Image 1 (cartoon, helix red, strand yellow):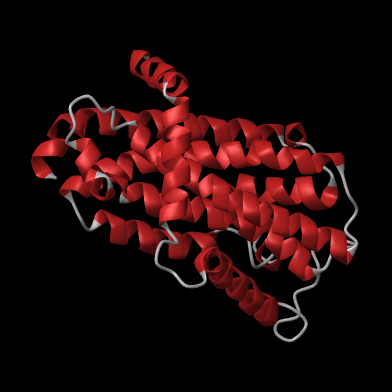
Image 2: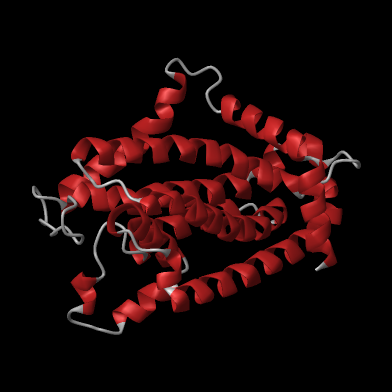
Length: 271
């Protein structure tokens, strides 16, 4: 616990450095690219278009799970946080190799490197949230006070991804295949979460499938974003799921940080 408090104090003291490095990391993604920041949106938009065609009116004709909202509006509310979550996992896992020159500096606290990557991903996520809000305003989705709750669910997703990221980034220094394992798990993860499909596709025939899906912590984030953006429900209306999510997230975060602390003395030797 002292280590967690020490990290929190370090984050507060070096918040300006973290912010500046996060902005620099964000800009670095597009250095040398002709279209620059445009590429940040192309792949996610194409992905949304593909899923909308497959599961929308031209494909399996999945009925809109939320009355008054189109399938695309429902899909976007689930997939935008997934883009953020998966990007954090991918970038944080490789952050120690990418910033190896900082890891080798004795005076630099390497625990803030995953947080720098998180800040960079949050900037990208902010753009996507604005696009999502613009889409809803154009298509006539009712403006709700619960839209502000997206900040809470973004924070919740950040803590889970950061906890996993502390573990995977530390292990990846010694076991380079970890980055590939994370990538494969992300590909499975999007299908293990009802993002493109509604859970009723399975629970109507096999009721216990709903319980299995809810064991996936990201279920809480996807459902929470949809509660916030489309149905107007608050997070405390899912008390059991909220307690379960934060219980799992706290355990994952502490375990990931413990692994990071244990392996940290050996980072500079390997890198």
